[in-house]
Image (tube, rainbow, N blue to C red; front, side, top):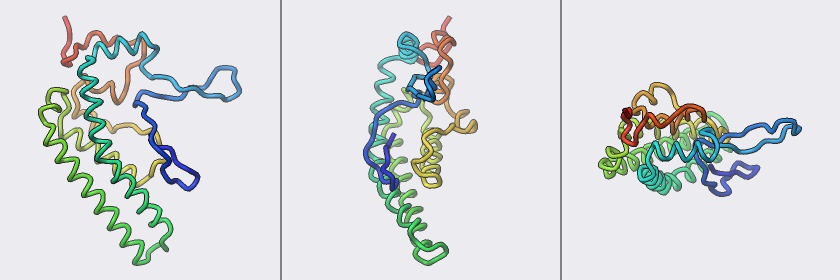
Length: 192
């Protein structure tokens, strides 16, 4: 998550996970708290064990590599989006900035393809199909260009989710805390 100032400029990054959600405190006059969609500490431990601790570590390492590559591109896109908002609509300057935005997106996607190709073995071990990951990255960057950082929550489209194996889906749509994850082993198959 990237926090913004009142001018929509990035202040800094806050590490969190996709399973963090806000919940309204009961009888607390519209106060909210952060909670995990997977459940309490015991449910998170069961989820981690079902996925596999080593596998989660490898996924985390891969996410850090993606973040290291994407950071400068996101910063550049924020700057270009600000320039686009300041440019008079329909003017040559606005069209030029729009072309620059598309150029940054294309360069970013080329870098992501290189990263995914270089890490194909790891992706295969983690059951992360490179094509699905690339489509997910493309949707995220397109959404960022369209909406910016003001929309923190978004659903991964079903047509992209179908490209991922079942054991990865809980990253995008976590199961309710009461639903058992133990039936999935760390390789994504059903256990006996």
